[in-house]
Length: 324
Ligand code: NDP
Image (cartoon, rainbow, N blue to C red; front, side, top):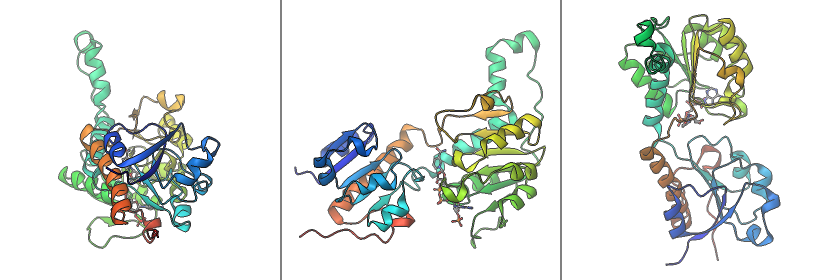
């Protein structure tokens, strides 16, 4: 069976995609996306690339015959997709297949944050239930809360459906108002934060959302405020968040994502009112397999039918090159 194309893997071959990649492609592995590691032969032969690490404009420019970068994940802020689009390089991501899973994780994180369930379990495991009695009543409850979603897209809508089932009102902020939902729209993030006491960020990373959740937004959320971040760590001013958690500007935060993963600032680890997860939003075998399959399906479709299945908006108009 002949191989479809030559792919660069800048990092480890994702194990859930390995067999299908090896069956269909010639793979070139390098440690990281660093032009210094690329030989002349690689420069000329690479036609596709896995998006499993930061891929900037300079790295894209190294490969004259590069046609497609297939990202493993729906968030593709680690890839300079605008630059790829200008150069006629397709970028694909893995939307939809992870939506419900990430929404489930968000709800778990919200309840853990508000009802302190991880701390209550620790109380039991440490024998304090026996020695000291019941875990203290939690200050916070979901009852009576009003939820704002920053980034009401595919995942945001799946979160909103779950919140509705809890009987809580939902509002949102996007750049554009959505016509087919009845949730209240706020044209600015700060006006959304003022209107709710529970803010869930599921907006993409990148320049447009850089530190969007800042001291002003947190102050607007208020002393009963709960902030949940399942989107990207870069969209939060982490220092302002730590200050707000310390001085009671907001009540608590639940975070799955951080500004400099996997490094979490000690000051955040020290916050008793923060519930912290190591970026596990989509991290089940079931969903990661679906994501790996969609990444590979995009590559196979591109090199057999000259069409990507799930192009990102910045490269939606990129056309496949025709070979003579
Ligand atoms: P979508 O593109 O469907 O939704 C993104 C939403 O954010 C859109 O409604 C968009 O509306 C809004 N948005 C984008 N930019 C801005 C901005 N600058 N200001 C205000 N609103 C904005 O993406 P998904 O729902 O599929 O995924 C969302 C993000 O979730 C991903 O990009 C990723 O970063 C994160 N994620 C995290 C995971 C985890 O493990 N923690 C797993 C999967 C995803 P509009 O364009 O109108 O502004």
